[in-house]
Length: 115
Length: 110
Image 1 (cartoon, each protein chain N blue to C red):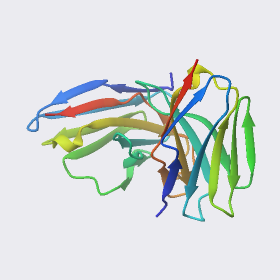
Image 2: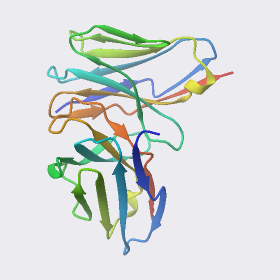
Image 3: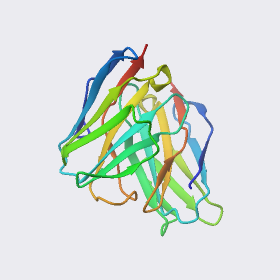
């Protein structure tokens, strides 16, 4: 286990639904990330939180809304998604905030299917 | 921004043979190069990393080499075993940005 837990593991939702993905890290890290993984494409960084403040939003559509209530928990709220949003959503954490030059610890991901 | 190219996209080797995966990057400011292994149903896990002040790093059967002048780095796995079968991702990072390659699916045939 990497120390990063994501729930649910699988999620099927309609385009009009609202759902949330949850991530919890037990490593005492100070930065948390959301990545999108689509088949045969590089990992796409969506959001970065450093010391519970959002420091990066890579032009992600507003139908994805992150929340970081504390340094151990990260949520991704989903609403009015499109079929092309179907992907594996990965949460990660790292020790040092404010830097991309650090080892990332990933959860197992949530496999999202939008119908 | 950084652009990372990874080759090959698929690689099949016989157990016991070596496997080599290559990546190139575009940003000369990149100074950290991790490699991640992703097994089926799991998230990527860091297996080895190298920083730009080092040309080679080895950890048991895996090694990474870095050529800063040519802006490419490679992962070498020797004496491959079936449990090495997975998708491998390279990445290149400066302080502000980490970019990943598209991945290599390695299959080790027993």
